[in-house]
Length: 362
Image 1 (cartoon, rainbow, N blue to C red):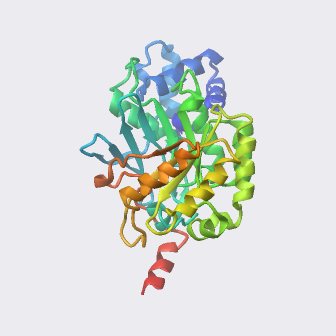
Image 2: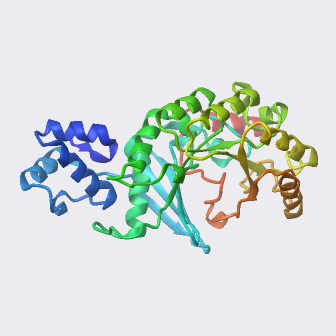
Image 3: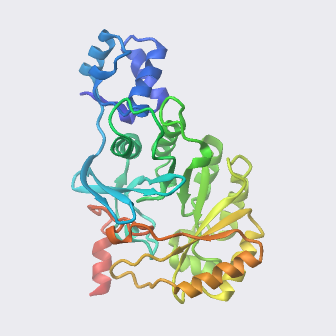
């Protein structure tokens, strides 16, 4: 059975090439063709020896997830629905801006964490994604945006955020292997400051990420105290705020940035009051951070509403006045369900969560 080269990180690719009887530098050449140029056709890899290309054709393939749909919103946000087999599909989103282009990548088919305000969490969970399925999202998007093989000019994707479907740190090894390729100078060559892992707060895995592959870290906070966070994010019952904030401070010892980004979705009448803002200021005094306020993006039967624009403005002003760097995320791609919290894909829920929710609603 042919091996999918997108499943191999740098070290695994070197072992594969050595197994074919080739010298180590051939692995670097192959990696550049695969990832820097996005070339799937071994015959077009012109600086590889003919015999090596023939071995590759016999032993390997380059296979990314199949594109089911490719949709672009009026603001230029682009969403791909990608088939990963067994009636499951994941979503990736490209967000263009004046000075950068950000790709939002998924790491799981669904999610186990059941955050109430997130559409992905309502879909249940099927499985973790493999390395090739994670990095394959970047491979496909780069080819779509930059053109075919050999396009070695300025890349449109300058930043990657693991903020798509799933909790990256609950799929740790494939996520870190994919990160390694994203950072590899022979592959995508992204800076650690331009690659962000977003987590709901899996404390032991935050420590492992610090030790093994420290990139920019974003924490889905969404509540400034344990009682409210327990309700919105059940994972907080296992890793409460005090433990999470301590882990954030440990992470900063090796992080490429000198702050943690705290993501905070604005839910009308739930977490958007003056007292909540004051509690957030207290958190910011414990962890060097930037707070990113996210207007809630509605989805059917969520049970939540977006905070009014004026409420969000006052909330931000309160934080800024206390010296807390705070921004409000511009909603992008909501008409194609590509905004933050809206990614749902197509998931065969083996956790039967959707069945349980339907029973509760009946």
